Image 1 (tube, rainbow, N blue to C red):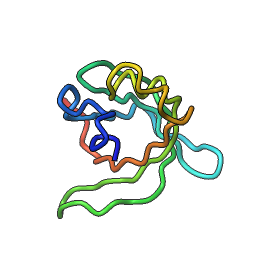
Image 2 (spheres, helix red, strand yellow; image 1 turned 120 degrees about the vertical axis):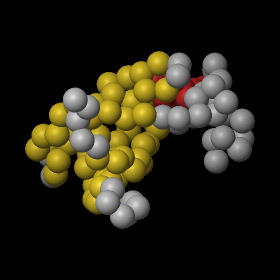
Image 3 (cartoon, rainbow, N blue to C red; image 1 turned 120 degrees about the horizontal axis):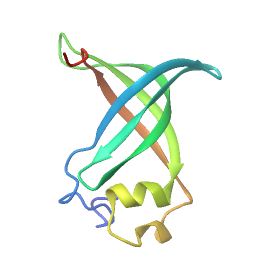
Length: 103
């Protein structure tokens, strides 16, 4: 929806990466600490592990959810000034794939 409205700069940020740094117990479930990165920058996040996600055979994924201030999200994803049009907080609902650590 945000891309269609011209708010998200998909040309500058065609891919969003989330790399976890820690999995730990949290209030009511597991928490995933990590870094959300686009071509224009990155930010540290803590997200809630929601449930397993269906991926191609042999691949394991999870749904993670959380929120962050829209001003922080806009710096990574959007055209300058877009945060003024958004709610103060942006909700994230991501499917992340579990990968073996790089050797």
